[in-house]
Length: 161
Image (cartoon, rainbow, N blue to C red; front, side):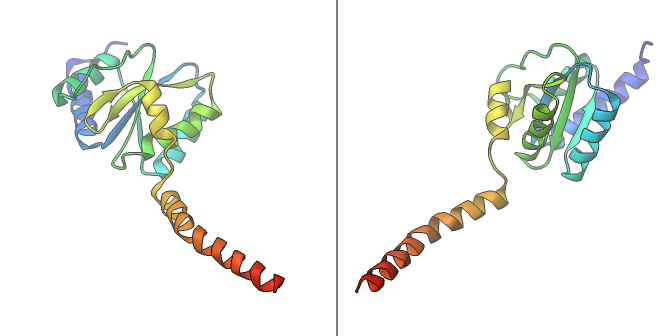
């Protein structure tokens, strides 16, 4: 069924709002993803403040062209969905969970990160970055480790004497 002009304008306005407000946008190619799995994914993404929407590629391109991001738009073949959010890492990281869970139905197609277009490999690398809480824990462990080792060494010396 064809979409009316008014509906297309409405969709482009919605996409323009998403594109302008989002810190990161991830393009995901989905093929044959069952509705049950899509609903599960949307619910989990929503819980992490990550939006997920599907629209015609031509309408998405209009919204992207209006923003003037750096670089070239990645090749968007097939059915494309957008995952977006105000956190720079969350959309890629949270969608990566479902790319691993449904590898035959869902793959990264690229995205927009830090105001420029990136390809699927860069999105995979961004998705591998741990969250801020995990990074803080790793940093604290890194600072604490030398002191802990020094205490163990002193304890061994005390036991030997």
